[in-house]
Image 1 (cartoon, rainbow, N blue to C red):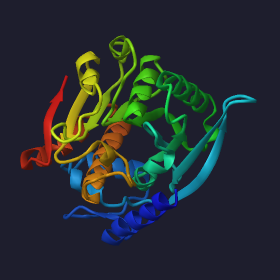
Image 2 (cartoon, rainbow, N blue to C red):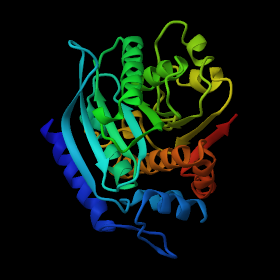
Image 3 (cartoon, one colour):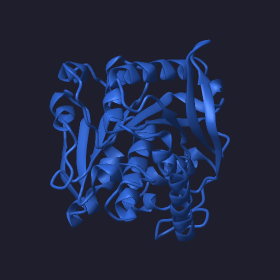
Image 4 (cartoon, rainbow, N blue to C red):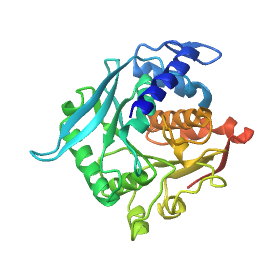
Length: 303
């Protein structure tokens, strides 16, 4: 836990040093006063994945160990990262994978909030059962949809996005298949060992983006199921050289450099902004163009 916290602080300061309070695009210094202004700027300029490597223009307020009460007995431990602007904004909910914790996604949540999207990291049983975690995730989203003030009154309940790493990605898919009120899902190198899972995936009818590790280096269990069995509205890309653990940040298990974790963060940010501002992943897909040409991203496909 301590090591994760130290890595988080170091990583955050490293990127903060690269861009103190705002993102520089190369043409214009980006200093939006609102999320709407930021979306307008991004959508009216060429999509560029690398701009999302830098910390966004908004300050972030953290609430560590924020408790969500689903009932008198069911309480969920979370970390909450609120973007410091006045508008209603999307909420990205992130679920960890096997043998991991919410702290493994602290930087990702902070980074998303700096780009104007509130973020919530969940702590659920980290050794499964992942079907139950998916059902719990559904209950959490339904509770927030009915009463956004349990998180913050500025949550736009029509723009809730689910993200999950590894087996947490399977839980996200289960929630989406149950028609949870979410705009869609972002799967961070997802894995699955659940029986009859193809039938679950066939029920998903919201947009899904799969951001994967390099399958030549690190192959998540049954990752191929997601693209194969989700009928439509799914896009997938792999990050060259990345391992399964690079889809977390901070990750004390990653065997590669921090560079690849930052690449996952930038792709996650682009995907979340794309879905929250347009309802699909086309903006994000366009932002991957240059890195696909350079070979940093590989095996891109969508249907």
